[in-house]
Amino acid sequence: MAEEAVLGFLQTNEHISDSHEFADSIGVSHTELENLIKSLKGFQIVDAQEITRESWVLTEEGKTYMVNGSPEALFFSAIPPEGISRSNLKEKLGAEIFDIGSKAAAKNRWITFEKDLVKRKVESVQDEVKNVLARINSGAAVGDQVINDLKRRKLIIKQTWKGYSLKKGPKYVSKRKKPETDLTREHIVSGDWKNLEFKEYNLNAEAPQIQAGYLHSLLEVREQIQNIFLEMGFEEMPTNNFVESSFWNFDALFQPQQHPARDSHDTFFLETPASTQNLPEGYLGRVKLVHESGGYGSKGYGYDWKREEAEKNLLRTHTTAVSTRMLYALAQQDTFTPKRYYSIDRVFRNEAVDRTHLAEFHQIEGLICDRGLTLGDLIGVLEDFFSRLGMSKLRFKPAYNPYTEPSMEIFSYHDGLQKWVEVGNSGMFRPEMLLPMGLPEDVNVIAWGLSLERPTMILYGISNIRDLFEPKVDFNLIKSNPICRLGL
Ligand code: PHE
Image (tube, rainbow, N blue to C red):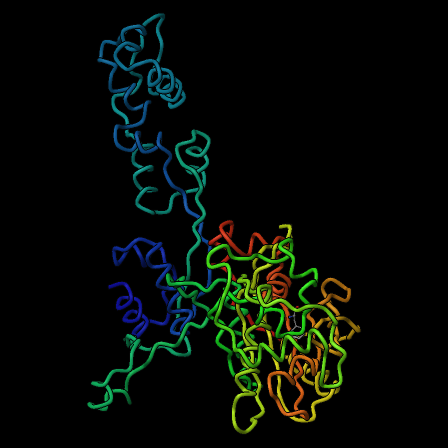
């Protein structure tokens, strides 16, 4: 093994002066030895100095002459004692050997030309060229004059070698321990671990790509937002009903029956079953009254409230329908308990589809129900919630919802876009909504809602909602999405 040879040699010798010679002497390729040297050097087991060495090597032509003899020697040998005609000799040797050989042999004064006849001038010759080529090939030194001649004849060429000279490094060992990669039970039991060397972690190694399921970007952001709600002590509301009655989606929210949002241009109504009979009767009566004539300090809307309108089934247009059901359930309890509720789920609106709108999207909704809440509480909780989402610069704009008073649109300054963007809607639920449910008079509800798609698009730099949702989603985008971290 090359490693043993190198370390063993250095144990008794000061240097390995030339890695090429050493590679030859132990019969490995220089490339293999070079890789070993680099590894040993990395562990400071050896010191390696780069060296360059020049040597003469035979060209292809030179190699042929070394084996077959030089053209001049071949030329000489082919001449019989009585001489030979040029044309016969040329035929015997071939044109190339004849041409080169005749010139060189003439220069050596080995031959003479008598008219057409070629004759030997000396009895015998030594093929010095062949001999010296063999010496060069075996690495022996030869004189400058000879080198220059061979170089001019292009029989040898200079080659530069890069190699190394080696000596012991500061951490030299005559035998390298193979570092362990794992600490096992056996190591601990036997006590071996005390003497073992362990391989260091390579923290720069690339981990293999995990082939597993991937979360869609919306799900990633949903999970983060869910965590924020949980950290803030909110409970999740059951949102598993896409189909809702108009009663819970609108009427219970004090949204009058002639409100434009209740038109089929804005809301998807169901054909089958087109209506629901299952509504809470006593509460329904109080809702009817508050719409028609008010109560609880309100004048109401002053119109004829129709049960058929409230019974119409639809695809819920907001998750506030779920919040309403939850608040009603809370009001039915014997003693009131304050609650913090949230939900993140799908809602449906009959919208013209464009780059930023689809007919369905996800709504994030949060509400707090407690005694004596004020608008200041709402602003405070919004600032807390949105700053956890990474939006700490907020502005509020007065707005209108049929079910909240006061109502506020929420704007956040977007550093990337360098402008204020609307991020949500909020308000305090009206007494006309809460008191018919039977909640105590001093209980207030502060609530807000926003879409899941908008922050996701901003976070992932997606400008067309259709690239995020529904069949055009690019799976590679999902696969390569970085982990979502809100608020950092
Ligand atoms: N329901 C509102 C919407 O769909 C959001 C909202 C929720 C507003 C709660 C105020 C209070 O935009």
